[in-house]
Amino acid sequence: MEHDYILYEKKEQIAYITINRPENLNAVHPPANKEMLEVFSDFRDDHNLRVAILTGSGNRAFCAGDDLKYQVKHGKPGEPYPEYNEYPLGGITHDFKCWKPIIGAVNGYALGGGMELALGCDILIAVEHAKFGLPEPRVGVVAGAGGPYRLTKQIPFRIAMGMLLTGDPIDAKEAYRIGLINEVVLSNQLMKAAERWASRIIEGAPLSITASKQMALIGQDLPFDEAMDNWPSEFRKAMDCPDYIEGPLAFTQKRKPNWA
Image (cartoon, rainbow, N blue to C red):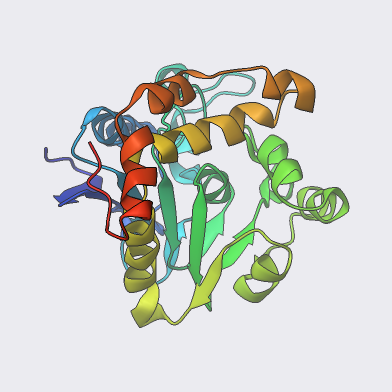
């Protein structure tokens, strides 16, 4: 599967997805969004893949957001690009359901749409020089790919509002302090750290992992009692899977489980 703007590689059970527009700080435009939706859909539907790692080319930017040069050329006031209705920013920021874990390996700037793309990941690892922010108000646009909704759920509300209303970015150290990211590493350790997280996830039962993600995300929007009474699809699959017996059996026999 070859693309013009996205690199996509499969190694064992891990999918590697790289935004490959370094000359634009990996900013995305509708053609790149289309390709990202294609590769993320392939990852979701490939039963041999367990975890995806998303990053950007080079060492300057994870993703600098929407390609504003493209917007100036093709956009009109009050009208989104026609392609946005079909291809959401980054492929995963809207109307895309995938219960497999996605790890963001943030190798530099994650600004605007790049920040929204990072917020769509489940685990975030960042290099020391990474920057996170939603500067849209400073360029006269609005974070329309889920940023205000996700950010206020993922960090304390007042801190989120401060970032949203000023547009000021934060560095990786601050992002870690407020719980936005999981780990800060040196640049040459980024992919190793992401792979370490991926390997730890893969040690778990496949359906237990997807059920856990599905329940966590669905539960964010439900009252606790209603969430407890809700048996989502991946939870039901996990209960019916042989792994539901294999896991406890392997534990009692003091051996590694053989997942189905």
